[in-house]
Amino acid sequence: MGRGQVLSAAAVALLLAGCTNGGHDDAGATPRDTAGGSSSTAGSSSTAGSSAASGGASASPSPSSQPYTLAEAVAPKTRAEAVAFVRGLTVQSDYFGTGYRRRDPYELGPADWAVLGADCLWRREALPSTVLASLTRSFVRPGTGGSGAVYVSLTVTVHTSTRQARRDMASSLEEPLRCPQERLNATDTVRGMTSRGDPFGEQRTATTDDDLTEYGEYVVDGDTKARDFDWYKHRLGPVTVAATVRHAAGESEKEQTALTEAALTGVGYVTANVDRYGRDRASDAPSASPSASPSASSSTEVKGAGDE
Image (cartoon, helix red, strand yellow):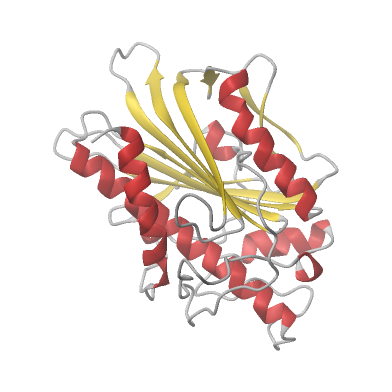
């Protein structure tokens, strides 16, 4: 099974995020990870979210229902609200599978994000005026039995408007064309990236307003063996949720598929919580005051994260 087939099949895992999550708060990113990323194509901007279950994860929409979304009218409007939003959103290590823990640094942001420069090098820069906050949380599953470590990161970014979030998605979709090789940091390079973007309801089952999937490989200087690299980005109104997976060397196709499905399921938990936050705000629930954090289970907030 090729990488495209693996990711296409694994997209179905997003629907599994509707299962109630009984995870524990025991949580760890690369520059594209730490970017909070940029992402896919413009899609529909529905203001009606699907119903969510209590306790952090919520019921995923069926292909015929409305996507997970966040109405612009109830989204954070100031930097302070946006920072409270991204810090209050629960992201647990076991969202992505078993064996993960927080990576050091665990958090990057919320006042800067990663930008792919003209030289195709990812670097962290101050947020532009069109972005209110961006926070990355990073996890690692240490290698065992001779296998290498797996790295997962998830970034939530609050844009000033749905229009700006859609522009960010479109920009991300174009990045592999602009930079066939992207330098993640001083030692790691991503290459051979293939991109695909889908608005909700088109081509394949999606759960948010629109989403981007990219896959390729990354290489570490001095190591001749390339490893698989996956990147997903989903838009819910003015908010984007991006995740990266840096696979371990020597994974079997079965292991690749399992890791990809688990990562997409974790993204589904987070997008469900964003959707729930919007519906709580829209219904004037007690927990939905302007400064309220997304409704979820125990917080994994950690302060003082540094740069990669």
